[in-house]
Length: 165
Image (cartoon, rainbow, N blue to C red):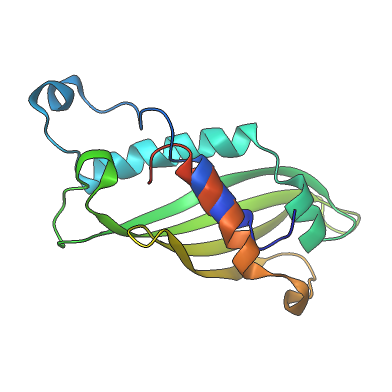
């Protein structure tokens, strides 16, 4: 697996198939679309479940040779709506852009509690990763050697499997 797929895979596995989950029963009965905050809460939980279930070891160990993958988590999810309202729409239909920050955790010979943060910007209507970039890390890395677009695709694919279609 190449590094640039990371953010996209995380995002896609956290979102697509199955129900995006725990919306209040009254909303399901009255068919009220969730607010952006409700949708965001559900998607963060779903994406973190997917991150826990799918190892990103290959990606992390490619970014940081010589380290051992420990885990990953979605630490930030910001959603922009098509119409600027507070409604996410049914199944996120009103979401236009998704900004995610994923933290990759690892351990290595020089750092026992290593981390690397990656930002991904996803255009939901176009189903396109617009941007993936390194934010910060406590490692010494060669940023030029990483295919950040591919890393973004990995994260989006993880998130997409749970409902952020």
